[in-house]
Image (cartoon, rainbow, N blue to C red; front, side):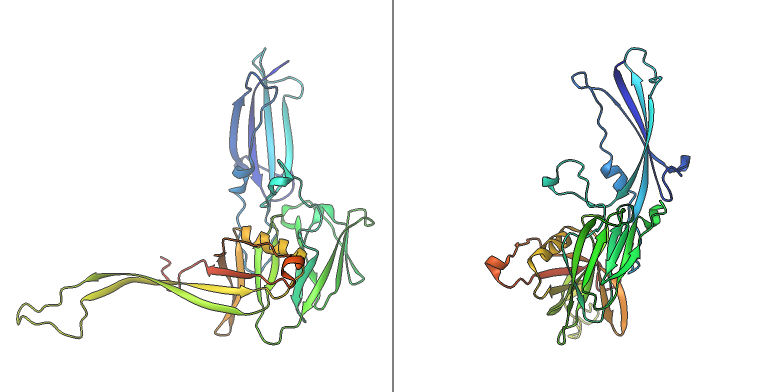
Length: 333
């Protein structure tokens, strides 16, 4: 038997693996085999990503989907479905992450702790969150206190956010066998008596929400956009014009607010976290104004990232420009 063509049905849904229904069918793709090749390749990553959306409000939800692919193979001789093994069904858990070029095609990212750096920075007396992949973690030990991790198979708990108690020093993440240490993190509790630390949350390369604090000076500015036209203010009845009316009239006035923020001094490996922040499409800030704290969407305005090292820069501080992802004057209609 030889392969002639293949058709795949892609089901995208929440819940447990295999719990899809006909309403979860999102795509049906067909391809014929190129004569010089022995296989047929389907790239479905971007198609699946269209169905993974983020709506973060400081709630740390597990944003994952199950993807079931039902493949039907057609024989080139009989022109009918393969009798044996002609249809296969596979289940995949999908996250909104990405691999680096050096990771090569379809890389297998971390299956335990969903942060790249080995150092976490938190303000003193402030708790934090650590994203882990429930399928690949058996337990987490925080300053000697063990938390067992269970995986129900449901997509809504595949990414779990473990609470980091205030003033923690060390976190250890173990494999599902509870004996193999996969990652050790150092928690740096920063005392900042002068400036107000701001918490930035972003979707990192693993598809999880990761927190990063900017501890030092923050400057807020806004840029105004407007249009104008020249008006005729002459009163034709008495051939005069009022001096309190202008010749130039302004309209469509709005503005966008920007923030320039400084990390404060961090260790060299934490630069990986800042790099992922630059590359994230979903970034949020916990911002307090008039006594009310809200989660607001922001966009990194800085488009260049200079990798700093202890050797070259001695002390490492990053300055990053952000812009709120909305206009200052509410024009939502």
